[in-house]
Length: 124
Length: 184
Image 1 (tube, rainbow over the protein chains, first blue to last red):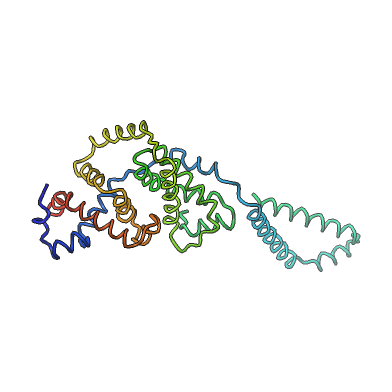
Image 2: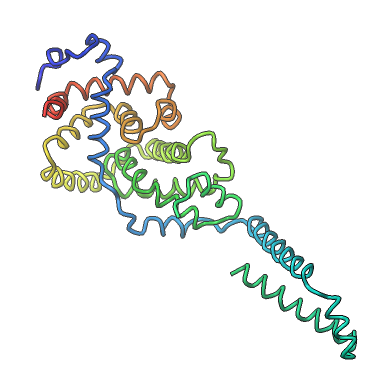
């Protein structure tokens, strides 16, 4: 083994280097060697095994996620309703003598179908 | 898409998104398992069990994670505590078969390694356990002295002292290799 005291000639006294560890060049080299020497451990089912043992997410989180989805669907429905030409449809229905009750019924039914579809899509 | 730790943690905590946690597990499993193998004296089965338990414990405690330390530091602290607690409980029992098996595997591996890697391993073995852990955390994992102190639950000054003494010892043992590389 090389005599450390003889080798240590670059800047600083022996006590500085040996005791305080002030040798950035050696530190960088050592760090590099330590990292180079380390193998990457393959997952080999480790992650799946951890995930299988995790407790289910809390109901509160699920409820919060559902709430966000409902709000998004309602907002989308609101925008559609805002842009929909109800006046023109009503006057056209009156002109073609379609009963108001059947028109409201069809409207509600189609709204329900659209909202259910939206919720289903959001949950997917 | 590679999200950062903070975003993944937010998704786990706020949305209950377990896929986000799986990304964290995949990101840190190799490093943590390798570190714990050293801490468990080469008992790979025990190290993997401890790593698994650490990930599960971290998941359960994630809502309490305040983000004032890096996730990796926090995870290491949990894992380190688990191993230390296991060692305290099982102090007299050593799984000699597992140790022998690991050592036999190491011997085969070592015979294939370059001289520098072999000398580095034996130099690391010559350190005390605390010194080895301090060097591993600070120089191999890149944790700061403060982070290593928090993981090892030791005063900052003690960790600095472990690191400095370990570096001095490694320097004295590995100087010829270092100089060979520096001088080409």
